[in-house]
Image (cartoon, rainbow, N blue to C red; front, side):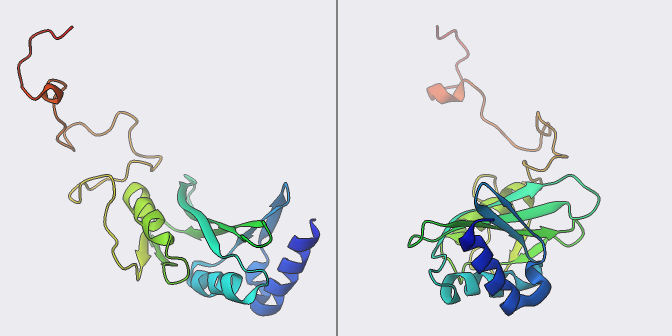
Length: 176
């Protein structure tokens, strides 16, 4: 294991105990599984109390694991601009309780990432300052990146313009 990862893991275990028990390393990048109830505390620690801190949330995204338990995952890709070190955090949630605390208070970049994850997967970020859809209309009741969403969509679920409307008319004459 990379030396920086060993030091980081020892600091995490001192602060959080068994919270960082689930971890793995791949190509020098550390992935830690954190209970969703402690994600905000964990992220604050990474940003402010680790030296050098993980001052950039490079990405946050959802995953549909399509499993009976821990179906959905939120993955956080953190980066230290000082050391150039990357770390991934994963939080799992059940389909029956798809709520995860927001980390917008730690990294403001989480705002749009969490909105996108909410829109595409339906994971609700509790405490988010402006949780609304980004791509789909607010009244759209489905979440297109879930694995149970049909590949061709749900007929009639969304009003789409006809292919002729892009010409500014509904004239269906041949435009070749």
